[in-house]
Amino acid sequence: MNSTSERERQLNGTCAGSVDMELFLHYSLIPSLCIILILSFLQRRQHCRQRDDTSYLLGNHFGIVIPLDFVGTFSNRWSYGIAFGATANKVMFLFSEGYQPLQVPQWAQAFVLLIGGVEVGLSHFPFFACLSSEFQLVSSILGFSYSLIWFAVTVLHIAQCPHGRFLGRYEAIMFSWPSLLCLSFLLGRFLHMFVKCLRVHLGWELPMEEKPFLEPHQAEHVKQLLRKPSLQEGKKSWFQTRIYEWDPCFQFPSRMIGTVVLAFICLYLFIVIEFCMFVYVRDKLDVFEGELESYIASMNQTGTLTPVILQVKELINSSKGVWVVTILPASLTCVTYLFHILACYRKHMKRLWAGNKHFLPLKFHSPSSSESVVAIARYSGWQIAYILWGYLIIHVVQSLFGMVIMYSLVLPVIHNQGLEMLHRLGISILTISIVLGLMIMQVWIASSFFLQPKMGTADKQKPLALNNRKAFHNFNYFLFFYNVLLGLGACLSRLLISCILGTWMIARIDRTIMQHGYEGADMGFGAWIGMLYVDHHHTNPVLVSFCHILITGHRERKLQQAIKYGHLNQLAGPCISTRSRTRWLLLQTLINNPKLAMLRKSKPGHGSREFIQILPMCSESWH
Image (cartoon, rainbow, N blue to C red; front, side, top):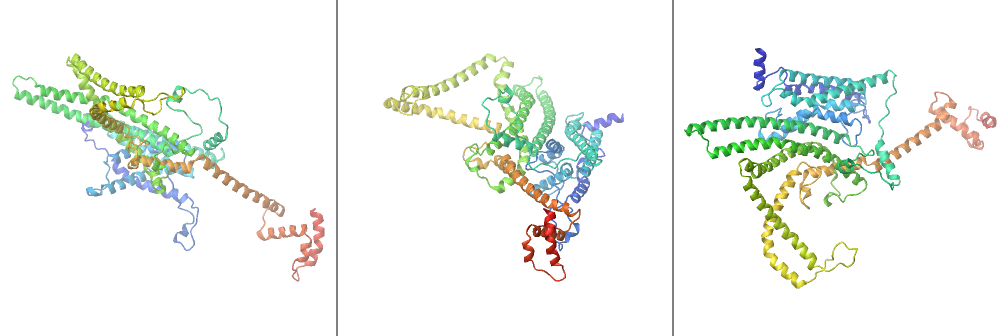
């Protein structure tokens, strides 16, 4: 009996468990700050401060902890992506403005959202910091412990309140399983790091090599540029030519992988939330229909429904069915956009590496450096927001088109008006065909009678030279008045096509929806271009290879000098001071040049004469 009442309270939305996730988010800042302080203490600073500085007592400890290198990181890409996926629930709360840690006036909501974003980022900071830390033994323990806390608290919250008021049973599981899956992956990743570092510490495995300055795929790209292009290329499959072709010389950075993973999870959560709202609205509409029918029955003694009520019920039922049916195509459209954005990123980066900027608008050929740096921070968040808003707008537009199809094709057939519908549809198709036919006929007449013949047999089209000018002027005069009427329909079609393409491409941040000359007003496209330029300037394989050659050459020269003096150190002994090495070099110089000994100033009491007499014997033994 108690379990039944508890289940009913959960379904009614009155379940109150012992774990408040929003309150736990606040308290999670305490272990998060502790982990950050520990990693910061282990992190060494490159430049030590002066002795008169108050922080000199700290030595070179407390360096800046980097959660993720947003420019040019190609290692642990999927680990960082899964870490981003673990923040999806909190990102959705921020997106819906449902998470507000402070109660402030309406004009200060932007500052509240900023504080909320900083708090969410700080609470999930240890995931990224422990993955990127150089001290993997300590960071793996800290990361595993912090991930285990989040996993245990989330599981406890789901176990206490698994049901909800919108989807009913197991609503909490539908919302939280992506985060649990990401946390499980992080637990396994930190455990793998700990075991590997422990084996290295015990001497069972060799230590990991230092992170290379030049990535292997970048080196392969430069080698591919230096090779001669092969004359015979292998035949590509349909998937490679139409959808995607894998390139071993290119890798997406961690930022792009994390953005796509987080966008997928946020899109799933957004669809679930939208479906919950649909269920809520559907229940309200069902109650409204019942009250409306009871009201009509009370007013009408016969109990028959009027045509208006039937039309309202038909509209409600059609809209509910269309809304459910269009969820799948709208979600598939946004999913394909995410994959297409990755393909466009690779295509645009390769064009920039080759020095090709013609695919960009002219005003974006030399973007501002400061705006590009800001764009690298904006892009990931804006891309997720564009995908979510794009899904909602695409879903609404597809639902409107679905309602048009329902009322123009489906409902007439249901109401036994199929012949009348076909008659109207045939007249509409015939009218549009005649209009298009007349437009095509104008082009055919102009090509056949009002252009001079081709100058050569190899020409693809006739030259732009008028022929039959008198007939041409009469042709233009009489069609002038018809084209005025035709322009009305062309103007409406232009508006309709612009609306369709604009709403269909709203989620595509890699392509502007503004017309030529107004691309700068598209802030999302500007963020995309700025991000491309930052990656181009910092991850260009040719530039990175050149810097790698300079660094390698500098290290080799230093190593050669060390080997040169190291040989002398081996002759002199295991522990030689600078003064002893200088005296040894002086002795070697005087042995090879005995005449220089006569020119040296001698001091009394140091036995300079005996030293001059010894030099010939030393030179003989040396040679």
